[in-house]
Image: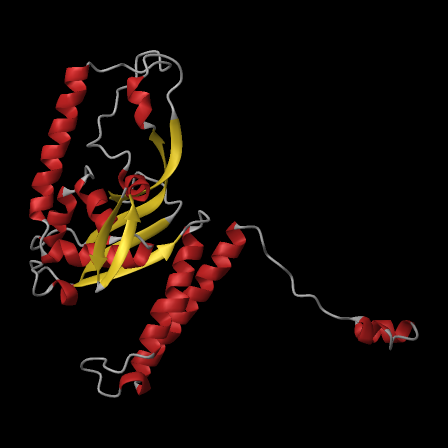
Amino acid sequence: TQSKYRRRGGDLKTGSTELGSAVTGSSLAPVLPASTTGKKSVVLSSEARKELVKQAKVTKEERRAQIDERYKYLISRLADGISLSEQQVEEAIIADDKFQLIEQFFAPSGLKKLLFFYQDVLQQKSNALLRSDGPTNTLLQKKLFITMGSTEKITGTCAFFLKTSEKVITAANVSQEVNFGIFDCSNGSILQGLEFFLSQIMVPALKSQQNWGAVKEGLKDSQIQEFLYSVDKFVGTLSLSRQNIEDKIQLMKVDIDIYISNLQNPSDYITAG
């Protein structure tokens, strides 16, 4: 069946299989522990599975009740940035075992950044819960999840929220105090994703900035020009570093035929040398 979810004045239909793909494999799902041999999965009793499902449902509903305008702002930004519906994003968030990091991000003097990865993750098939022997059935599925950025390798899309102050984040100030950004590392290259983000988004935005606060001259000010120059230089260095790492250094081809054709005798060669 399909459910309808309204976002920004329009109807967005979301298949249930897509919704499951975004949130499958969360810690709230009844995941089986591996046996000591590593070859078999421990089968939970029917009662134990029902209790896990019940606890997960209660936890999700408690978290859903916490969703206010602050959460909705983050959800809408994520939905737009990674092409998911707001319903899919909400389901992924409330099923995430790092859900509490969002509240820590909102708190005064709390976390200064909040990271989300959206990428392929090896997940257990639902029917694997019913198997008592044999290899565990797993498959790669797209998953949106909260991360600290220090344990999981980025192989897809990284979306981030940054706070500009130590203020408590409220429904009234969330759009002013929280910045959102996203860069694509789908090919596994963080440097390329960062390079694109800076060169195609941040640098053009800075160069079109009219209001520079106390600097009345704006873009004409020498310090502003020096700052923009240093940013351009950094992006160039980043690009060269990426090319070096990828072993794609290419020497510029020089057409020397025109010079060689004019060399007639040994003295010409000596002069050319």
